[in-house]
Length: 180
Image (cartoon, rainbow, N blue to C red):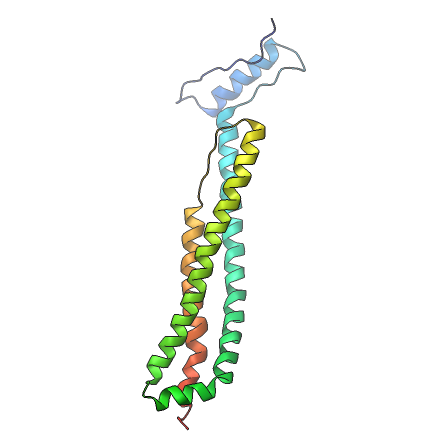
């Protein structure tokens, strides 16, 4: 019966030139168009490079999105501060200090961002695991799920920073407002 594949293990310390010489020798020894000779170490290296570039792309897109989100949140909280000027006066008349009012707005922004982050991670992982399981079912691979921890911590820290500064900077204008 015809053979499907032949795997040749090369010493780990073999140089690139030695590997290329082996591949060339195999191609010369078996002159057939049906022969496929590949260097798995080179494939793994090129795949790792592609994954690194893709992760860098995702990181850059995340940073651009956070800049846009910061300005959207900043405009939203500026509008919120201006619309709720009467409420600020009432809360100040009840005895709240300006720093406490600013803290309330920062806590509100953090609560919104952190709850959105939690829901996004849960729903994203559920959808991702479902799609991975479905793909693995058709390709007959073992289930393998890798969480992008680096991107997660980048997004988490940027979300907290955007929430803090996006709410703190507009609410600083409260310092100049009088109680009445």
